[in-house]
Image (cartoon, rainbow, N blue to C red; front, side):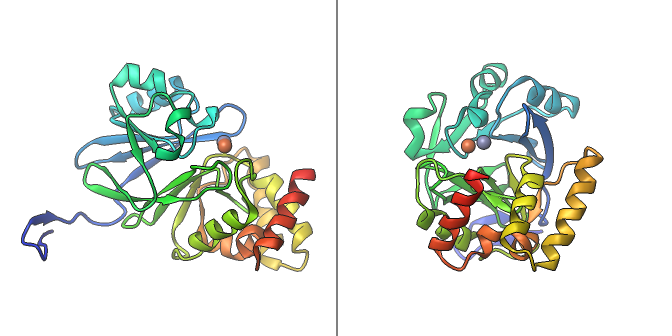
Amino acid sequence: MVNLAVDGALRVDYPAAMLEIIRIPVLSDNYVWLVHEPHSKATMVVDPAVADPVLEAAAARGWTISDIWNTHWHPDHTGGNAAIKEATGCTITGPAAEYARIPTLDVQVTGGDTVRLGAVEAKVWDVPAHTAGHIAYHFADDAAIFVGDTMFAMGCGRLFEGTAEQMFANMQQLATLDDATRVYCAHEYTLSNARFAVTVEPDNDALAARLAAVESARAAGEATVPTTIGAERATNPFLRAPTAEELGRIRALKDAA
Ligand code: FE
Ligand code: ZN
């Protein structure tokens, strides 16, 4: 449908949930996300740990990678940047605060910025804690958020460059999203997280049921992400932590587990 926006500019609204999102498992437990916007054919990669499987996944679909979006500087999120850029000439967008640590970065963004993939817009969120400049990308119309290593299924990222207070604020911000929002995290840590989570919340029936489902899925070799905000609201002890102190306490327990 075509709308006339308030300012008189002609604007084309596409139906929601138009993105095609492909999961590419790489290394021991990383997920790289390939995101295709079919109207413009723009194709973006979130956090390419490596290049070859990503280039192959795009080529198999007849897609050409136009963009890379990084969430943070860690090598298992940026290691494929240079080779994908060399092969495709793509534009690399990432956190301004980590510019010096991502030498391939073309476009620096920070919380509140809008980034475009073809006809679709994403908002950049600042989610510092795992790294000091970590960002997330929220596609509101597609009800999808790419969180890197900030939230995992039933878990959260380790606090390498930030505090429990910052991670608590990140969890509270994620909790503002609708239950149906899909959460695309960067690792398959779900089984380990679930086994830890039941020790934090032994009386949580939804969590016990989810642990059983995850055990079956992993035994069958199935991926368990994306997750959803609704599933995390019911079962993620870090999202459910009532205070930053409690989040910090259980994060320390998980680190020692
Ligand atoms: Fe990381
Ligand atoms: Zn990672």
